[in-house]
Length: 114
Ligand SMILES: [Zn+2]
Ligand SMILES: [Zn+2]
Ligand SMILES: [Zn+2]
Ligand SMILES: [Zn+2]
Image (cartoon, rainbow, N blue to C red):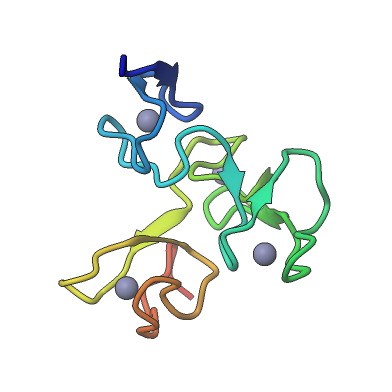
């Protein structure tokens, strides 16, 4: 079966369409946006996740502008993801997540302090 390639929406690199992680930028949702809390597929422009009701636009911890819950701020481009502190897990987590959606460990790291 020929491997289809599709561009990653985050970095534009063509990767296999069944890849779960972009090999170029490490995104865990290379072909669409996922809710950072419950991993349900979400669309840009949606105000809240239909699954867990979390808001999908949040203030950027770096510049303060409202940004979609994607991997980088739409306004200033700074990263909105933090790595899980569990070394065996090391999953990228949205900065507002209080615990890792993969291993369940509490996340203490915060972008921009506070
Ligand atoms: Zn990518
Ligand atoms: Zn959700
Ligand atoms: Zn920003
Ligand atoms: Zn984890």
